[in-house]
Amino acid sequence: MGDSLTEISGYPSDLQTLLGPNYTVSNFGATSSTVQLDTYKPYLYEAAFFRAKDYHPNIAVIMLGTNDARVDYAQSLDNFVGDYLHLIGEIQGLDSEPIVFVVKPPPVFQNEINIDNGTFVEKILPFIEQVADERGLPIIDVYSALESHPEYFQDGVHPTSEGAQIIANKVYETIVNYHGIR
Image 1 (cartoon, helix red, strand yellow):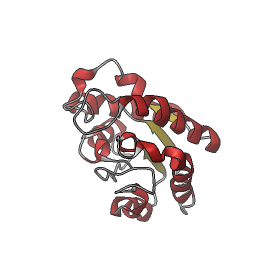
Image 2 (tube, one colour; image 1 turned 90 degrees about the vertical axis):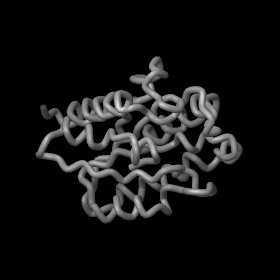
Image 3 (cartoon, rainbow, N blue to C red; image 1 turned 90 degrees about the horizontal axis):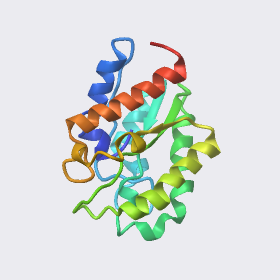
Image 4 (cartoon, rainbow, N blue to C red; image 1 turned 120 degrees about the vertical axis):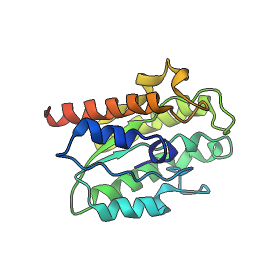
């Protein structure tokens, strides 16, 4: 589950290859979506979110927050934690009782999409850690895996195929280590 970093990056396909035939990876990304409910496109109201819930996953990987660092959304971040906890509660409330992984999204580099790196690093990332801590959820740290690699981003925000592979590798490693399978 996520925004355009999930929907168009190709990382879910790469993850499927890594996990193999005993898993089915589905892509429930929604471009431009946010955690915050008072923005133009909250993920909680997107068709992708409803499809994800109808899918009844056993594992849910949520990579959201990048679009919440947009300059025009940054002033309303007071609701970010509560809105993210609400979204996670919706997933945890499914009959399938999925294991939920919260992702620290990839870094934001120089871009023309109006996503502010300062807001992302100083507010969004700590909020994501707070949400994971409050719910006792494992964190997948994609940010650290890519923070020194602007070359893996086509526009400063969206990963190239190499960047998507790094995201898939990090998600794979965390899931495999969490479950103790190989």
